[in-house]
Image (cartoon, rainbow over all chains, first blue to last red; front, side, top):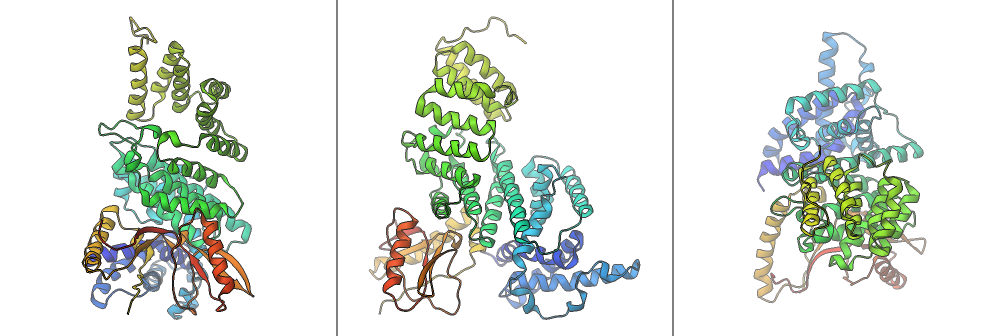
Length: 424
Length: 124
């Protein structure tokens, strides 16, 4: 790797810790970001000459802190205001670097940095965008690309979100145990959102959105490093790894969705699966199940099956049952119905999902599954109706194309009449 | 004299490599290994999963305690290692516990899943 690549990689790895510490000092996101930016510029100049520092995060914190203090002082001269209002602990600004290295604060620093992005007033997409900008350090251009919007629209979105966060005030006091675990849960949910934002995509967009999945995995690993004994964080990390492992097999060469049971499993990433399985194994020892662990355990059963026929649907049905109890939701019941159809047949599955129709009337996957089950039961006309609804609700072109394939098959098999005139 | 060569690096940096970067590094390493393997001098080669996947068995007042995470003590040194085929983590912990019971040193055993294992080191 070139020197520049090494430096940029070291900076991006050090970023959450350095930004977290700078935010604690300055209690202001913009000041912290500017200070970090400045430290990075100095690193680019200094590191190639003097060699990389032993602890890049500590170096960036130290340099960023000094530069931030200078900036705040300059600003204070222009518009006089008491410095203490802006700087929490100016008196020890010159104290030696060692104090910051002991790691006593750093867990809470990083958690806080992530947590401020999860502000409940912010819509999910803004939370994600701002976390990618502040915590992961992706450029606005990269984020815009991943969200498939223009750069200036994304710039505005992030600026507005940051203003909201600033208004809300940074919760800088050290959290107690209960608060810490609440923060961790909120942050875990956001990391999962980031992943899903990247995962729900079609093939044309997949390369642009894959960085979201990778970033989510990086953040999950970071959380796990900070909270090593949290089985739910093990579960979350495992879930993301096991799902992302299937990415190379999710679309065929024409960009069509390949269903899990039809995927070429030799394309799955063995390395990610191994790590995911190891984490599931580790989490289960705690005997403290939670939704991420259960979902990871389900993903693990798919990963363990060498062929689709080997899938342990009985166990998957049980796990979805457990998940339904933890987080009652029609979407989970819908997923369970897939397992039920394999274990107890399409009729039982259909009976299970029919009561959900009202609540899932706007949900593509409901009508996709309903159509599929009706098709298995040779109720072609009804299947056709469900598939039409699914197409109308499809989120991506690939989803719609996949359903059309089913309809074509129905028509080829003569299960439905070819409509003489297209109804509007 | 048989030597063990232990690899240390920043996991954050290594795990931030793209698949292409990682593949390139691995290919270069395998090139080096292969030369020694063909001369019959190289033994087993392993790449470990990240430390987040690690569990540690530690002796606390004579009792074996299982702790999540890697071995993090700097007052003790890396003295040796085993590889063992296990159906699950419980089996690995049990092996470490048996070792620990007859080992008077009071040290720890870090249990880390292996990602890549090549018993002869010859490139495949």
